[in-house]
Amino acid sequence: MIRRNHRRPLLVVATLALVAGTALAFDAATVARAHTGDRNLVRADLMAAALASEDLSGANLTSANLARAVLTGANLTGANLSDARLASANLSGANLTGANLTGAHLESANLSGARLSGATLAHASLTGATLNGADLTGALLTTTNLRGVHSDAATVWPAGFAHPDPDPAPADAGAPADVPATRARRRR
Image (cartoon, one colour):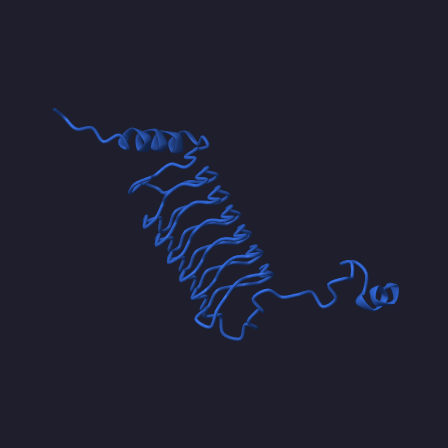
């Protein structure tokens, strides 16, 4: 009796879909050792996919939906994750060295112990993300939204970067955003 690998048809279909340029949907799928050839996963829907310890180095995941995906220990070295949706994703221990995360949505993502050295996070949103023990040496954080990030003493920030407070409170919490704080105080 020949044993069949039930995961193989999924990968064959995925490869054909990639060649055809159609969107992929792997909602809550387990993709075991998925080798996509050219690693072109632009706009792929990998929401809640289990991709722990996967080698996705150099993959093109531009605008991919990886919200709630499990990428613990994954190798994303040099991957293009620009404009990707990674909200609430678990990237703890992942290697994102040199990755392009420009405009990525990492709200409430777990990046504990992640290696982000040399990564580009320009215009990315990390609101409420956990960065405990993450290594951001040489990372580009131009206009990155770090409001409410959680970090600890083991978090390594880029040289010369002003370490953000873990949960910064606005200067005047009662003032509307478009009203200067001095005018807002007079109204109280």
